Length: 216
Image 1 (tube, rainbow, N blue to C red):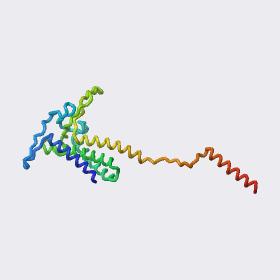
Image 2 (cartoon, one colour):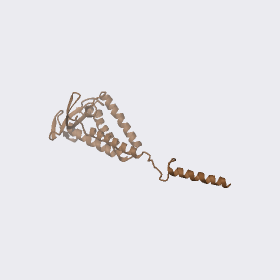
Image 3 (spheres, rainbow, N blue to C red):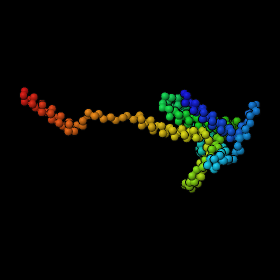
Image 4 (cartoon, one colour):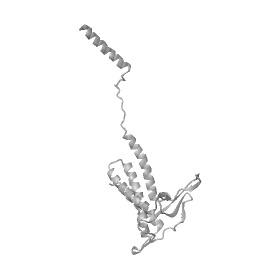
């Protein structure tokens, strides 16, 4: 399935970006990158777009449900399920396969953080790593139910891939669902039972029958 190239590209770009932000060290190759200090923020396009490094123990956009281990295991099984389903629909329309490949790439990207980052960086056991987030975008000043929102929750490339994939899936699913609906056709030579043409035809047939009976 060549569509998995999209999944691989998303995972690769996501992980490279996260390592550049978090920093890494490979002593036997002589590689070292200090990364960005945790909690720091740097302007990219003024105040609209900033690089803000945080580590998220929960789901996308800082949502925390069920604890770290639950989220890690859930993400693992969800990724396996998406991969199996993507194989089953390998002959479906490209937009649908593309959307699932993007969702799978985003899920795997964050799953790697949760499963391995704790061990790799000496911050926790297997399955207890934290997700690296760093994209910080300005948002409308909004007061809602006692909460004030001025910036969008910090996210990463994997989160973006999942969100965009879901959007494409919703749009393409509705589009192809409409195209699969059976078309209702009306034959031009079909006449309604009570139309004038039908009544005239019945009268002619009745008249001919009466004439034949009279002659007989």
